[in-house]
Image (cartoon, rainbow, N blue to C red; front, side, top):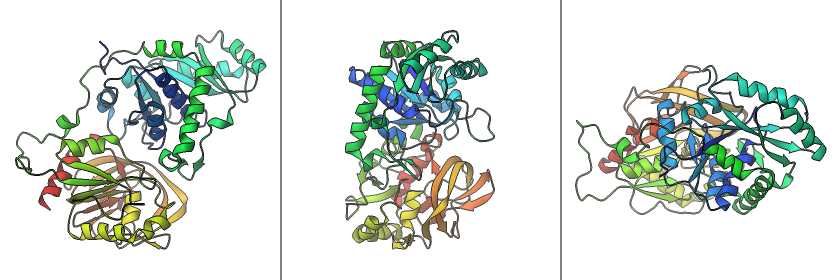
Length: 463
């Protein structure tokens, strides 16, 4: 019997960004799913957008595996949780194979996660401007870390049959088999903008067509049987799968706030095209803590879900939809009224912008006395943060790791009671805590600190 800890798996990596990881990983997921396999999709790192394409390819929730945000010890259990009931798992890497958190060595790199998962690596190489040199490149990556097992190469952007022959000849003596060759194919390209690919939710019909084209290209150019066989060489993982119910269970000395028979509090979670950034584990933890999680779309819904007792607004692209969000005045007023009542509101990045007085000059919810605007500078990177005061998410002194990724500026950047004190890479305060509101640019992964979800739901019951 195949358990989630022994499910066949492989990691799709590359020497650098732009080599074709997403095309190959998504196409491979879809091609294998097209064979009737239940494929578990995963993404190394904090990226929210690629998992949307993975979900489209497999029909399952795309999940992130981030050793910086969650810690190395949770990678195996979170993987096993996502892979429950699956025949095979495909993990898309991040950046170059050995690129991790800045100044932290291998931490959170694709290589690090591959080792934690005991999974073989398939290296996707952009071969468009090389021939014999490809052998030196592959040899270097394969020999750099003996604990990383590169089980095969997929050559991408190959120009012709002649070019392919030169590449294969060069790799014959490398000891790393060629498991696929892909020609240049503009139809598999996905559009990008200031923070990466355009999310699936914003272009579903085009995304469906793009994923189908990726699947066809991979099925034609890659040896699916050999890739599946390579996945079966992954080592078994020790330990049980992560369980949100166990993770969110209160400590033995605590007493649950919710009394028997009391109705589950409704936690509204923003979604739709403007708010596409969220980790699946957040909603799972909220539900395990006793909440009824109800999604809503701030672009279209003019009121919050009936009985809303708490609100979670994650990341996304509100700047792209500022006009539409602003035009939905009834919902903006409902959000402001909920916050004014003292109900718990957790907002990250895009959610922070939505709660401001205005975004690029357009009225938003007005919960925070701050203004937001687009900026040319990209703010990007992992952060080590500490809660500066008690909030609906955490007591003062709680340490969490997070990630920032935005091209916007909020002025002022912190309120009278800041949400976080950033410890690294630079010391500063950031975000807003007022009444039941916790708003910040920082994206966090609640699996690393499940008490966040438990505390939020408890506050929904008592606010």
